[in-house]
Length: 150
Image (cartoon, rainbow, N blue to C red; front, side):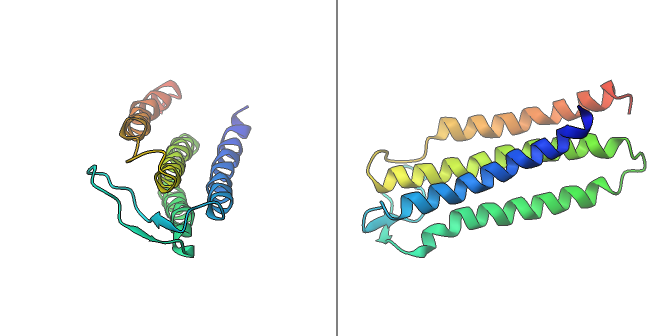
């Protein structure tokens, strides 16, 4: 089972990256002529722009952030003196990446809903919930290290 953990977490990350692109591609043709390009976090009115391929910056940015954090996790995991610690750290990093991907998908979904007039701003409760899960993964990592005796 240990050998499947990291590849399985990578598969789920890949599915979430693909989900972001599919969501953007399917929604783009159905968007109205005027769309917001960012979410009004302060509750103000969103600035509307003509629908353009700039809309795809969200899934593109999702891939860039994933690639950057993924490469940083691998670079950092190689620095451990104890090689048994590296897979636990990679598991922790891949779990965090899942929730980072969910934040991007959440933002894109909210942007689409805002463009269609379904919502007025970002669902902050859901966003904060995803951040809370990321914060809860810190003690999870420490517990996993203790259970492994590292």
